[in-house]
Amino acid sequence: MTRHRILFFGLLIWALAMIVPDFVRAVRPLGSFGFYADSNGLIYDVAGPFESETQSPAWKAGVRAGDRLDFTRMRCIPYDAYVCASTIAAVGGNEYVLPGRQTTIDLLPTATESARDVTLIADPRPTNWFARLVLALDQIAGIAVILAAGWLVWTRPSRMTWGFFLYVIWYNPGQAYEFYAQLQRWPLLLLAQNVLGSISQAAGYAGLLVFVMRAPTGAIQPPWDRFERPLPPLAAVVAVVLMAAYGNAFGFHTELLMRATILFGIIVSVAAVAILLKRRSSLSPKDNQRLRWVMWGCLIGLPAFVIADLNEYTTLFANWDGFVLPEDIVGLLYLVNGILCLFVVEAIRRQRVVNVAIPLRRVTVLALMTSLPALLLHQQAEHLHELVELPGWSWLVIGALVLFVISRLHEWSVELADSYFNRVLDKTEKEIAGAIMSAKTAEEIDRLLSDGVARALKLASAATFRRTESGFHRFEVSVGWDDTAVRDLRAGEGAMKNLLEGETSSFEKAAAEEAGFPAELDLPIFAVPAANRLHTYAVTLYGPHEAGTDIDSNEREMLVNLGRHAADAYTRAETETLRKTIAELRAQPDLSRGMA
Image (cartoon, rainbow, N blue to C red; front, side, top):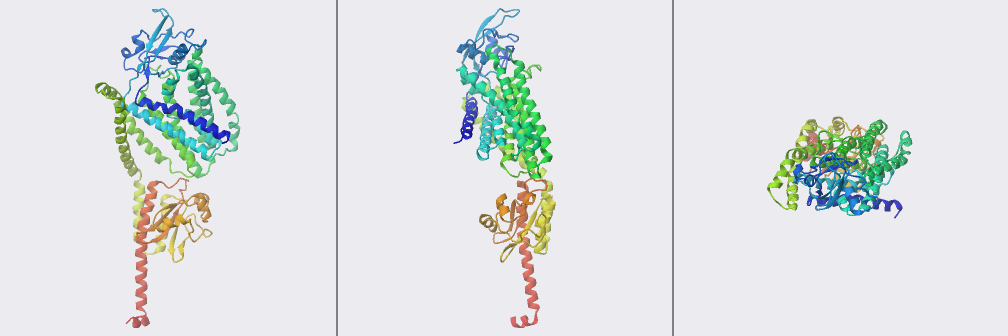
């Protein structure tokens, strides 16, 4: 294997190793000492994740908001494993530790208290079934995003795919609190992980910018190459700053640096969106539609991730009258980012995509279906957990049942939304179907299937090949098919077999070009037979929309229905032609005497 493949497997295993252990939290929650301290050592909250201060181990031990950690005694130099581990677990805004873990924090003197040491034992963090369900979904989405980005690197390695892969290694919806809680038993390993994490974060920032400069084709245009060259040294500088933010483990006040690291993410997110907006006009219609998927993935996904990170790793929101987002809401924000990362993967994987409004509409419905229970039930779920004592695994079962109900409601809601937004499409299908059924000749049916549909759906190309004794022949000049285009349909053996059996078929670019079909935007991508159970009368080849988007599932269903109507119309037209021919033959005197 090449060095790149070895590096790829190492990064893939590391990325999964960080988030997979958090599935344990869906069954057994981590613990908390019941206080939050920022990176300057200021204790600003002594309730922590608990519902009230009286439930907090820190409050019970006499710790109060406004106390400060004594960094002269709580530091990793000179090295003492217990002191170092206690320091790392105490600072940074949001601590997760193993349940039952013991730690000692050193506090500076206050106006009412002298300097003191306080020993704390972590209690399990309160949780509820919905938060556990969201956590499980986050972990599944995180694994899916990492594997999908890794698949892109494996199948089409380039700076573009590597950039995206480096980005999702760190910025994916999967959470790594269990991984870090376990590493706290070995402080030196945890410090090493923080160093690697800082490098990974910086590489992720640079990777995202490389990706948006090259997506979706992988090629970089001349105006952007000069911006790509300085990214590696800038990433190195950012990595150093990120490492410095962990200096609180060595006695330094780093809250400002910690907030600056989040600011880096905001700046990079804004820059990424600005680059995507700027590049829209320089791409072909097909690639511009793919870029729209990337752009909307960044427009929605990046802010969701940044808000969740600000809530989890800084005191910025806490300074607003103690406002903190609930754990399940934060999990949903991470989940939104993960789903939209999969949008990006789809845009790179596929050569042609449907209108981005369709998947966005469905994701919006899914977000509403999941966020409403989060807003209404997370407090009630905590009370229910207190009233009904059930084992931890049972809440996973309850969560799975809720997930099933939500999935069914989502499916029903999507169908309802599609029926609303597809009213124009349904009307168009009814009008064209009526015209086809009223057509008197096969030529008229040909034109309705090709030009009529192309005008209605604004397709770049469409052509009907009617079946003859020698095969399928194109009699008419139609949209995207001039006199120089092929007249006889010659597709692959598998495609022709499907069409003769009355099944639709899709064309890959290479197969379409080999068959002599029109190129570029006019390239046909979908073939629909006009067939009944006994015979295939014609085949219509459809290209993408004039805007470059693919034909979506609802439009494909419409075309299939029109093909069935056309088969009936062709049957009637053939029957009428045959009757007319017989009548004409009978009208001839010689034939009439012979028949007599």
